[in-house]
Amino acid sequence: MKTFIIAGASSAIAIETAKQLQQKSFKVIGISTKHKTFNYDEFYKIDSYAFNKFPAIEEEIHGLVYFPGTINLKPFARFNNEDFTKDFEINTLGAVACLQTYLNGLKKSNKASVVLISSVAVSAGMPFHASIAMAKGAIEGLTKSLAAEFAPTIRVNCIAPSLVNTPLGEKFINTPEKMEVMQKKNPMKKVGTPTEVANAVFFLLNDESSWITGQTLNVDGGMNHLKNS
Image (cartoon, rainbow, N blue to C red; front, side, top):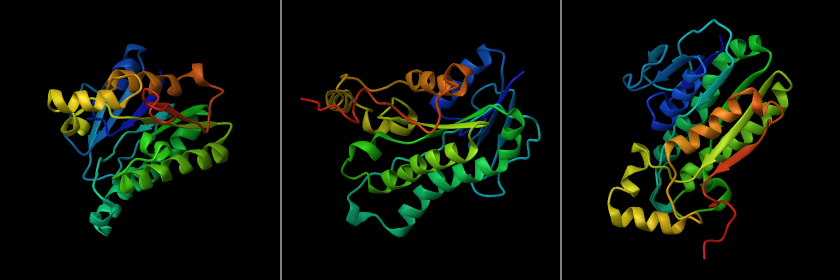
């Protein structure tokens, strides 16, 4: 049986990913700073996504996804050091800590897959996204570096979504008017769903993507490159 670790396990996209993995009879271990919200095969609640906070898991690990993220948007002049530090710690240093904790388990598999989460804001360039774009830009750089370092035994890829209909993005779409505005901004005229992003994560975790590594897959309705006239 294959074993997968999902950090940030309480998020909507994480739960959809876990459902797909369990449908294949894979073992899914959830890790979250929040309480358990899904029937993971094993679940660990931790205080933070910091070094030395992740539980010891000694078994062979076939895949790992790091979901924790933030959406902290405001004019650049209003950001302070605490804002930048918090976003970087959760999005980037947390991913580093998670990977370092479970690297030996991933190596045991000899063909493991890691999926990290970026944002369309890195490639598209969006106002008020300075902090999250900086943190997620580092994630994309980390993806390429580790993919080169870990090949051929561990694949490392990244998903860069646009706005998704999840609790994290709820404040941007919590009225019909806000939803309409966000839909119009997207070339596909829609806001993404957790399942649509989970489908991409599931693909990158599995053997069907065995010749793909070091890539950032934009799951964003075309926001990263297409002009929305």
